[in-house]
Image (cartoon, rainbow, N blue to C red; front, top):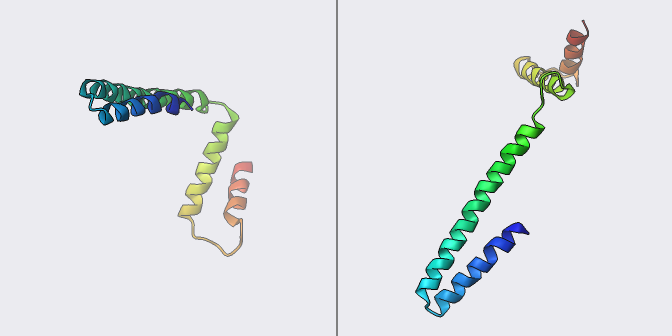
Length: 99
């Protein structure tokens, strides 16, 4: 919705200015459209970076240890040859963790 509110009026003004050959207004509308799109990109990138910082797992957080277990399991399954028995690598990993 925010994208529509910021870009459609500027694009419409640009189209009308070009249709009526009002070059100075077309130039102003072009700059307005470029400014709106540029700021949308900057604000979107900032919001995504802030969201990543807020939702990043922290040391000692349960999600962090779960990610490490999953990462170890994926590395071991990639390094060890596949077996015909389903879940063999997972059971081996659980035995190692419990000992």
